[in-house]
Length: 238
Image 1 (tube, rainbow, N blue to C red):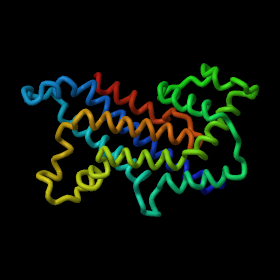
Image 2 (tube, rainbow, N blue to C red):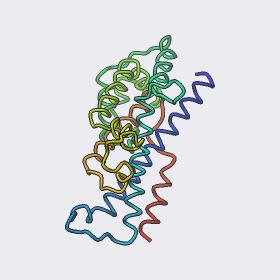
Image 3 (cartoon, helix red, strand yellow):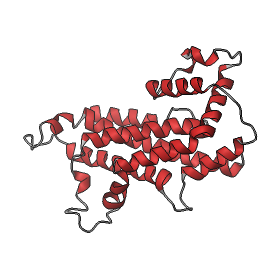
Image 4 (cartoon, helix red, strand yellow):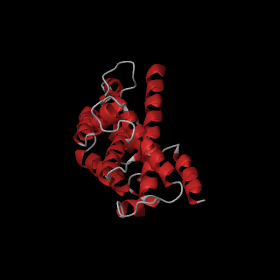
């Protein structure tokens, strides 16, 4: 891997981490702070002190997450950081060093980390070492390489399709970029309650994105920005 490619992947992962932490902050506010108010809306017309600020914070975090993901998977601007060219480069790099590992093992591993996301415990995946005497790290490396070779670009395209099926590309263009002059209140959407299903759907996209980067770029599922969520939780509970 060239230094340029490594740097671009690192930059892309920084954005993935930022998208995820923004989503988690939004989710935390909606589930742990605003939950009762939303359940009782519109009967509960009086918010607790600070909830208007937290609503704005949550919605801005949601919008930032959507904007980042839109750039990574939907942008066609060459100057922006996009995942597709990076996945294509990774496939070129692998082309002369392909391996063969059972499709069943790849599928089992993919299903298991999806179940255990965001904290899979690979050492408990005994099936990885069936009919294979190598170290578990070597087996995992081959699984990732084979998975991105077989379905890497398809997985990315499917993620883009899901993102757009949920309508997040419209949120990016019409709401957060304030491009649609026909909106009733272009500047007021950040102060309205989001539909909970939108937050759940963004969570699905984030999960698939993180699992995708595990296969595309050999990155683990942890997030180095998780301390921000912990710090935010401490502030909210004070």
